[in-house]
Image 1 (tube, rainbow, N blue to C red):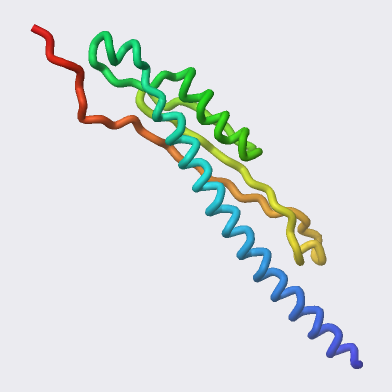
Image 2 (image 1 turned 45 degrees about the vertical axis):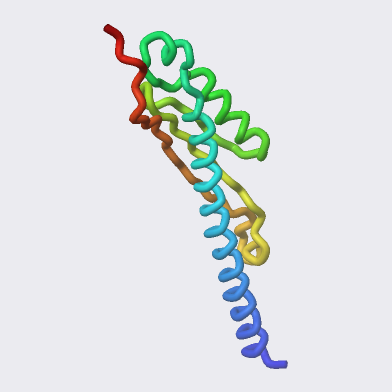
Length: 131
């Protein structure tokens, strides 16, 4: 087998390996975005019930929202940050790291992908009108 054939074979293997790993990174980015959206929704669904019953104002219970989003992420084993944005939104940033399959041949052993989402508490329902 000639040197040219060996180099060409190696180049083809690295190329196809890179295609496989890039597809895996794109999938990880999609997964990170989906997980961030679901965690943000889990947090934004935590309404401050005392305030809602008292004056009819629907706001996110900050402590319960952050706890719910973090619990969702912890269950899946994700690396993340969860923050509140104002009184009616929660922001989630997720990082996923996956091992590369073929790129270790050229020194890239892990693929890192990030996703972020914000969920807003939007409701058209107001409490009862009071005289």
